[in-house]
Image (cartoon, rainbow, N blue to C red; front, side, top):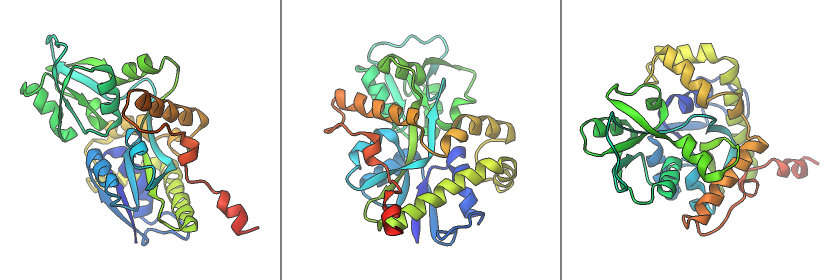
Length: 287
């Protein structure tokens, strides 16, 4: 069995469940996979422990697990004009050392936040608890992620879009790399390539049959949003750009790694193409 860990948010569920429902016709099928749904920071922490064969991760984590995992080119989520939001209670003025709730130490939003807001006092908590923590003034502000960016309490307002933070930090026009998938390097190469192909196919099939799959997910209460919110959320984070990494997306991940390296968060500077699981082996195996 191949363990595949993903988050419970709508885009990850959507991009995986064509496998779960048995829609993928390939040597690696739905009976080969065992899926686990956990919040993104738990996934990041488990990836540091090399727990799962395949795992959704924050892109910001990857340089810390690069010796044990390779990047997969599919089931990715990028922001393009949107992304996580720093929110506060309406009318509140944030001081330089404001208290903030973030969804996890190794998330992409945390990396960008720590680079941009150097004096903020950070508390980490489950992303589902952040909105309440801000409303109850346990913290002065919090970064909302996943579906929470679409609909939050009317007593809250956006202090800063993390998309704008990203743009200010990199000073070029690139999408914001949020999350992707990584696969254990210890898996035999040919089997790993078959797993990759199955995951790519799952995203392709999900996008081709979006209405049918979305309806099934809603009927089974597998996601936290209604039909309208699901359609909106998938248009942002599970769309035609999620199937395979493009050259522009690769440049964006490179820029994220570069930012982390320049600010002392990574010991080494990685290039995305050096970390990807490729198909080159197949041309030698079958030549």
